[in-house]
Image 1: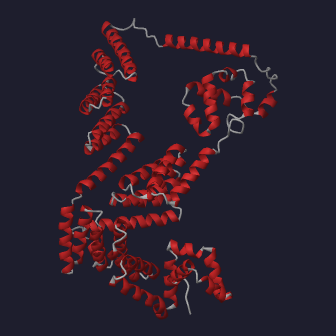
Image 2: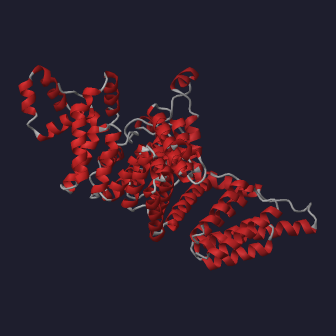
Image 3: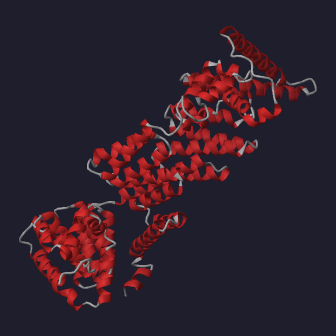
Length: 595
């Protein structure tokens, strides 16, 4: 039977996998509609594990992540969706929405524009672009003169505080404050600056207005003059210089208690670190050969420090010398293990090794070293790289598997099984042919026919719809789609499919016969239905977005009222081709009934 074939591992395992993935997707859709985002994500993940080459599963999981508030993972899945199918409009909508949620407005605009360049009439992309532009041009964060953490009132209060005044006279601090005033979301970025952290700490320690009244402090001093402000700034700089000098003195070590060997080792480490810093400066200046020479001197002075080898590997990576980079990364890890270097440092070297393998197009090795890096020390950035590599490998494997000649061979084997009514084997061969030639509409049409024979109408419909996406002028596909929809009692859809087929070829016998059959079913078939069956058909039709859109159309709503209240007006409205087509679709769907 169909179910037995689907659960048998061999020869039908591929068919079982495709069905399972669709079932997981359906469960995820149901959970997402119910607002259960965690369950939806879990089900979509199962679908991806079952069939990682289907872009729709990544698109759906991206939507679930975004609804859950996890924009970073939503963005990763959107990029995966586009990577698998750049011709899928929804992928660009998902990417734009995730970037919008992350407040990366320019990137979001670019994502929507990239999609609109391919799908200029897509309403979802157009709306998403308009939304992000509106928020970008009219940010909700406070402006310099409005509310927010650096509002005009707050700035005036801080100017009266002698502790904060020197910071407000510092051009660097003021530049960062203005950045936050323009966009409140930049606050976490500017807070990475130590001076801003110190300033913010003082600012937060001021106390509330109520506390100030209770403690009755002396009145604040008058605003400073330009001369006193300059004096304060100079005093502040002098204080910072003295503090820096004191800090420098604190790090000086007393070597007098060390043995000659220990003193020599410490001095060698100092010399090595000095050479490393020299190498870093050369690297920043793009003087890569000098950087390598400095790192070599550091290694000669202290061969126990893996950092110097890691830095050399970074230089080789910049020079695109991938093999040398990998060699030094692995040397660095060995030195690190021998000298108990931090796990994080070893993980970084392994991650760089993975990136070098990625550049060499050796994705298997890149994934291997990413996993090794995660075993040393888990890192979110490395995990994102790992996901990207796995996606790239799946895509590369899928492309490498494609072969038109082998697809034709599998198709012919499928045809032979179909002729001998060995439906399960026919499905297996057609599915193999689809993997070998995923853009061949005729093969998908054959697969759809075989799936119909084992009563898998949902799978058959999926395949025939993909065939039509590949070739919208394929009349046989439109005819088969109509046949499947008739069996599924989706008469309104079948009517439309047959008409589209006849629009392409008005002599096609299958479409003509199908249209006559479905018209008769619409006209007379409901007469033999029980009330329960009629309600079931109408409820099934209401799952169709097109039907729901028609029913929410104010013009159609008025026409439906006129049928009972003002028949003349209704008949007049039916003379309009568009209105007539919509009413006929509702009748075909069983949503309304003629008497």
